[in-house]
Length: 372
Image (cartoon, rainbow, N blue to C red; front, side):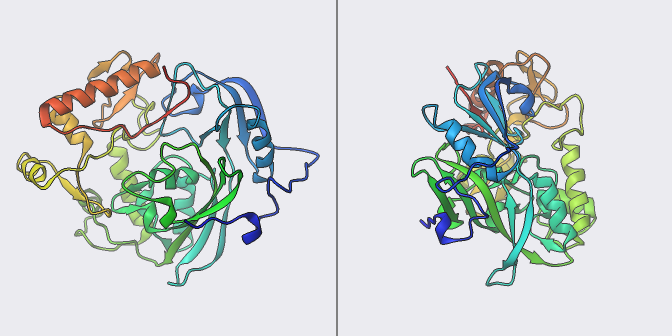
């Protein structure tokens, strides 16, 4: 594990240990703020303390604020993968709203190093990188959320994932109580997971990626995207055309925020694509399922295919105010939904898929707050 303090590398002018209070702060602190409006599901109770951080220079003030509470705080980016408990959150909630992209040099392999603030929107970073002739993120177009959340989930889609380009993250370690820098190997990136997933030890502050200069995209490896582009799988196309094709495919599934008013309260994929054995893969392929190989060497089947196989129809009600999307086999919330109802729906889907296929789904969504 590689750990460094601010004395080991440039500190961007701030550190908790040597912070001099400024006369003004841009961090807004609110007590009892309902968290439902801060998530794309629109579900959840209030935060005892909610801090909106827009400048990393103010982060030491949040550390001082969090010290008044037991345990580590909860970090919330865009709330696009979060299910907040109906009871809310008694620990401080930090909304990472920092913005900024810097080109900071060149890696040994010639790729361009890009440092990004954790609160920066991922969609904006995709557009920025493509606009500067850099590839590596074009297949991530349309994924909501912040850059700081991408290593946590090892975000990926259509043949690309964060592990392909991550160099390091800079974070605050609530255990050692100092700034640390973790290289990509230390982050333990796997299929939609990392050392950060399910842990409250670190708050990610900045992320460094290595992106390659090219006018053409990475090879198009997913058939649906290739068909949209009218090219063969493995082809390379202008990166902006790849972005538009990915967005079109995602919109067709209702997987771009705002593209479907009826399904707007969503977290996208509620379940991981489960790993399957060779025997299961053969059976599933015989049944018409598409089996995909992932960079971690696993074979996985689509959770949406399993839901369809288990008899869940598009738009069908699963629990109170929770149903299957009209466009894609995933769960969405209707007006008046609760976190209790959404978790009930998750359990119903898991059980029915297990009964019909013998495969157990695992929720991908992050459960935040005070659960019973």
